[in-house]
Image (cartoon, rainbow, N blue to C red; front, side):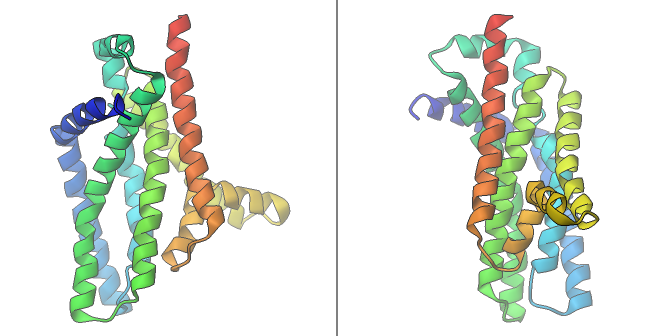
Length: 236
C-alpha cells in the first residue's frame, strides 16, 4: 500500500480538479432533488426506498463520465509508459485509479444524506433501510467504477471508453428485465448476473451474503481484467 498511496493522492487531486466531477455532481443533485421531492409528495412516506432506485439508474449514466479518463488519458498523453516504468506493479496502478474513482463516486453520493436528514427532521424513517440502501449504493458503485476502469484501459479515446463502459453497465441493467420475462433456471441465472437485482435487497433493508459476494466478485473480476489489459502492453 505504500506504493499505492502517492499515486492515489495524485489521482484524487486530478479527479477533484476536473470540471467533469462537478458537472456530474450538479446533474446528480438536481435529478436526485427532483426525484426526492416528487416521490415524497406522491408517497407521503418517510423513506428513500424509491429514491434509491432512481439514484442507481442516474449513477449508471454518470459513472462512465467519472471513469472515462482514468487510464484513457494516460494512454493518450503517453504518461502510462512513464507510470509503468516507475517501481509500481500493474495492481498498484489499478488500485490507485480504482480508489480515486470510488472516492469521487462517494463524494457525489454524499450530499444526498441531506435528504435523509430532512426525513428525520419532519418524520420518523426506519434507519435500517436507509443504512442498507446507502451501503448497497456504495458497493454497486465499486462495481460501476471497476467496469468503467476496465473500459478506460481498452482505449486511448475517452469518449469511446465512456461508451464502452455505459454499454457494459446497460447490459447488466437489461439482464434484470430479461430475467423477469424468463422462467426457470435461466431466469434465475439472469437475475443473479444483474447488478440491479442484487441492489433490491439492500433497498428493502436486507443484507444478504450472496449480494455482498456478488458485488465484491464483480469488482475484483473487472479489476483483474484491467490488470491483464495493462500487462498485455508489455508484449506489444
